[in-house]
Length: 287
Ligand SMILES: Nc1ncnc2c1ncn2[C@@H]1O[C@H](COP(=O)(O)OP(=O)(O)OP(=O)(O)O)[C@@H](O)[C@H]1O
Ligand SMILES: [Mg+2]
Image (cartoon, rainbow, N blue to C red; front, side, top):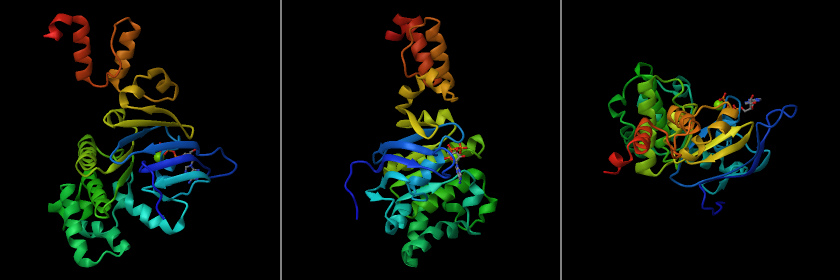
């Protein structure tokens, strides 16, 4: 049974506890994520980000409240595979996600579990590898690939299942800067060209700055929420949660305190140069 809702991911007053003697990992979380949104999730270690991801993927079922993904309530055990196919997850360690000894077989793995007929599998694997620009490695052994390439293979494995949502739990944390860039760019491209909804859990502020919306989780609660500009302008609140803001947002905050009339929403060096120029040379920047 599918519920009708305008949100692709709906969390209604969700609480989750691992261990009854400890405080809940998540308490009274409510959130709505629309189709095609790119939502970043920030939060310090142990704040509850991975628990949130696993609740959406139906790996965990909420103790209280409801999680509804693509109209399917995760509490309904019969829907677990429907939900996992629609909301695929990639994790931090690229090596833990590879199950086969040949790239194309690794991408086939999820399809085999879904019982997709062989003749249908081949074009789906080819399309998925092409979408992540890994076609030429279809017959390669995964261990010969870089971390970024392995993560792209993991993404292809999800794509082959034709998902509506991709949840990435610190998918770039173990990669070098070029691997991080290629994985993030791949996900952004899938978000824009295929309208796939993205939930991007990260510790990198500069990655969160690229999202449509940012959720900040602290102590199992969503403490801040808004566009990157709205969230990163709250420098004091972020510091209280032991979180950084992008360097230019912090500098803008310092300059404002020194009396420079800078507007909000400065996240990048380009934003800073443009706004400082407006303050220092108002006539020049008007022309
Ligand atoms: N399997 C588990 N059993 C018991 N407690 C757990 C388990 N997994 C997580 N926790 C606890 O639940 C809370 C939230 O953990 P979670 O892994 O969701 O945080 P996180 O934000 O993903 O952290 P990190 O940034 O370190 O990945 C923490 O207090 C953690 O210790
Ligand atoms: Mg985590």
